[in-house]
Length: 496
Image 1: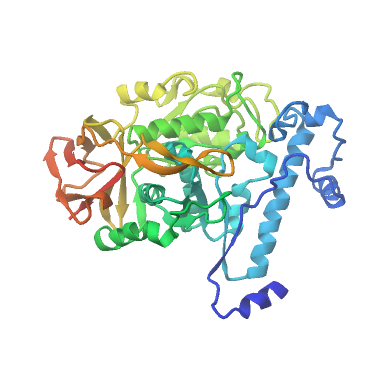
Image 2: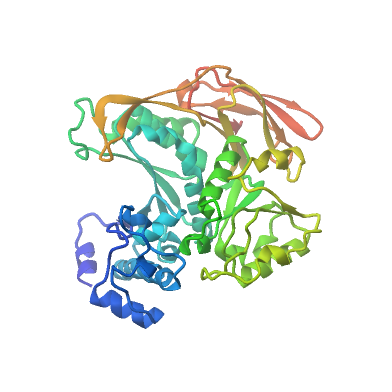
């Protein structure tokens, strides 16, 4: 109540509160205070063992503390659950205090096992949040390798969808203009809001030519307002395939015999789908347990490395298959239940392998099953690049009832600052080299994905120029001829 009184006394009313990333950065060795001990005993019926107990803590000598712990021990798995319960309760308490004010929290990741070590579980927190904010990319040279972030963005976009289409935005940190443009362009490609921010006074020494963020981003924001004001709130991605990601695998530390975790496979699928311009969305644990929701869409399911599956999820998957829907499953499948306990019989042994709509495929960490899937027309592949530089990827989205094709470069070369490093010791991104060669593209697009309209191509790199798009109509598809000369990072194709 005291905090609420402070908010009410502000001269400028607050619209929302951002609590920084809600997790325990201190890692697995915390916390063993009396409150945590009491809660662990009360909620899970266990005692926190001493640090010398290797059956609980696993191998700790010479290992990064974020990889400690014995996931074969169910007590350890319960302890991780209790820790993330506490963080989720903290978020709930903040929401109770601020009342009607909107609440969000920074979150740069929601997929890998390592999150367990810092008690970061956005899926547990999301019911108490009003919108989601992804920490997209920073100021380092590594920011140009953006494709690896697509999975995190779309994972969180699905959470937002299940929160009643809550707003989503990506924050990107910049010191120089090229990185500000990259963050802006990625937000457009992803269909989320853009929050640009500088990191002034966060380096050992700010560069002499550092600018304020409004100077870095204003031209792109003004271009968007004046030429391509597409609302991401009232937009819908074109979805051709659905990628399953279950928190049960992460929470239980599941890995296959080669040491790959479920998220490793999800990440590789996401990268392959982006680079092949295949529209996708995520199906997470709760939706997977509901066959009614699964069957609302015709797009196939990819279930790769789904080691931990609940009985409810398996029943849902079988009902989904019985209704003729397509599933692409790689092994292992259902070797453990949702609590991480080993099943006597893997659920893969209980599947009817004779179903024509069930495809047992190689894991993407073993081969490239996507080529086989496309070649054999197992699903409708809407967008194919017929000619031009293969670095370009396309994503179709409907904005307020009108189609748009967002085009982005997946292969960027970052140019580092000569001597500036970020707080992790990585060179600061000063410029980006954009490859503009072989820039006359032809995308073949299925008629089910796009409308027969007049289109123009635009980009901030072309200022106010609007290039007419040549569209050739075929029997079942259109050929879009795009002139991307002088464009290095991003362009959008819109209906006139």
